[in-house]
Length: 143
Image 1: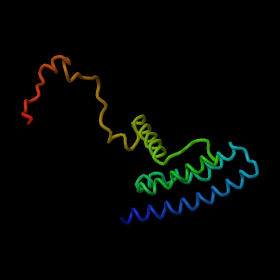
Image 2 (image 1 turned 180 degrees about the vertical axis):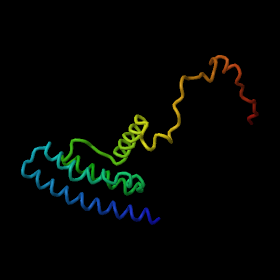
Image 3 (image 1 turned 90 degrees about the vertical axis):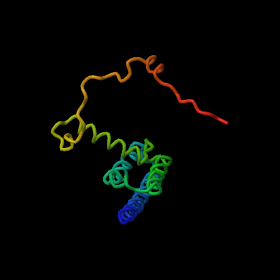
Image 4 (image 1 turned 60 degrees about the vertical axis):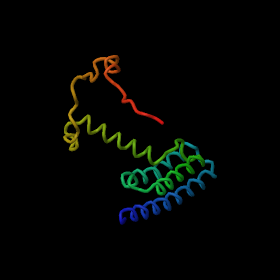
């Protein structure tokens, strides 16, 4: 419970800071700043802040995750970013990147906890027809 409260506080502080940055982006947009430059500022000011503690946000409640997703959606609709980000996609992307590092580097600290790769394959069923003929459903009464 204490962890959830601290995550909630952390996300609230993150969203307050991101709202300030979005306000700055809105002001810059009024001065006809190029969309590519706004995107770059969004990535450096806001996305980097979210990515910094991304693993913490994975433990957040659905309500808190949705708050972050709404902030991303608002930024996308305002034209501050070219991509529509979601917290779940960012977490999945980061997890896949870590998994790829672990799998491809035998010297990685987590490499040893992965299951060994099986060599070859085996066929569990010899033939689908034989499987069908050996499978009988029990007869039951229905009334």
